[in-house]
Image (cartoon, rainbow, N blue to C red; front, side, top):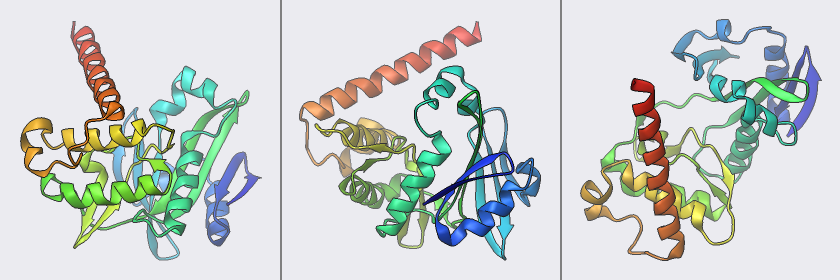
Length: 236
């Protein structure tokens, strides 16, 4: 992966796409370059742009770039777009079913990331559903074997194209000893299609109920409880 400065942006991407990434950096605003807008709200922008006759997805994590505490963490580590671009390149080079990365751009102010963009190849297909649980779990385990956890392994974050299942929209984390992150990925995936009801017949946990799975399950329940409290407070 190459890293350089251009037109107020910092670029990170594979050498094979360096020219395309540098041309994108000449634009002051990326969004108008997209020929198709999939999402455009305060949380994120997702669009499709055409480069050399091929379609690529452009994503900007607006909400995370604007949150102060997340911005503070980028004082000593790369922003989310750079982390995902590095992950995609490693996974794609290893033959995992992830979209090929074009690269990422980020702008910093006072040392922290204030705007970032991720670009990867557009993939045709449909979002996975409960019927795709087993193949989604299989590619997730391949990801774990490479040393990564997905971070947001909801079934809709996997794409089915014929008989192949692709990994999308990861918030990648390096595996840590103990297997807690991998366990949380699998629990998150199972719960996203019905948890203990719809998923019982296809138990992707394989009967494992060790400490890592208990900790990951408790964490997942805590996250959902906290979100429910936030929603109730906002509705008042």
